[in-house]
Image (cartoon, rainbow, N blue to C red):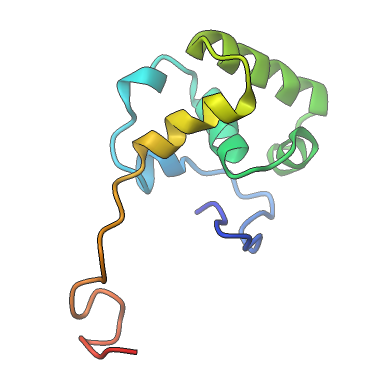
Length: 110
């Protein structure tokens, strides 16, 4: 999965589709993006710069810049932040504590 909350442990060349895996079905607003554009948009939503995304995906910074420009155009937005909101909207709502056993502690409270 993609690193979150400042943890870059998975930012080592791994290329996954966390919108599809971690966040459920791809929302209709971004369903028309290519798989690569969704991948780039996911990294953008994690706060990564074009140069960082390029390194992970093994392409040039210019290629990432072009992907970002196409994403902005397809989503009819002007900024990376506005585009990233589509990913945030796709995330399921966070609700309370995990059910007993879901966190691996068999219901024990910390």
